[in-house]
Length: 108
Image (cartoon, rainbow, N blue to C red; front, side):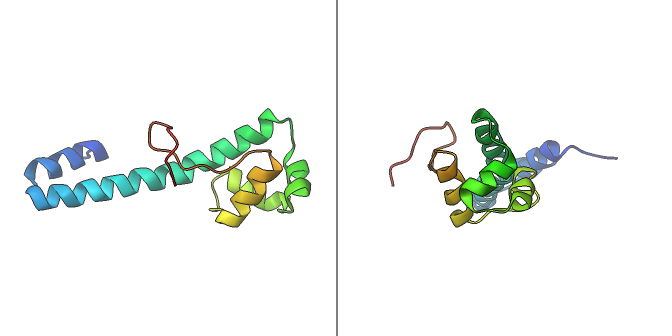
């Protein structure tokens, strides 16, 4: 018998006490943030590059980041460092911003 992950989580939550629910909430928030980091950053980076009609090679030249690294980042194969993201976004005429899950900027 197989279950969907969501079904499994629902069963665990239904059987959990308050402390376990609190821990599940923490893990869920972490998982959601990690999933967004892994899937959303590469998509946004590629979309920003394409919107500016730049090739990966042109972005590499402008940012000083190797084209092969940009390719791996955009495909989600590697996680860029903050320095790399800063250089790439600057070369794209953009900036990094921390936002909540609804896209509203957070004050830092």
